Length: 97
Image (cartoon, rainbow, N blue to C red):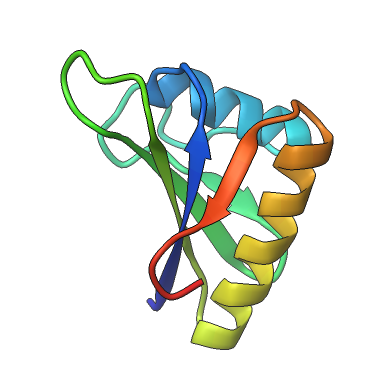
């Protein structure tokens, strides 16, 4: 599936970020606690999270996958706006966004 990455400048672990994303978009975390955990989004999209590295707190990369690149871009854009407005995360576009 095509994916688009958006970047959040937040202090968070991957599981915490997924829970906040799920709460913000009124969804749930699938596969919580596993390496393949993700949050279902509208437009048949999914969000997964990668934290920069051990001991690193910034940034958190959010990969948004969807059936087409256009849907991935649209879902990523909507998620970026929701995370800015809801929990007030500082967001930026990543590669391909």
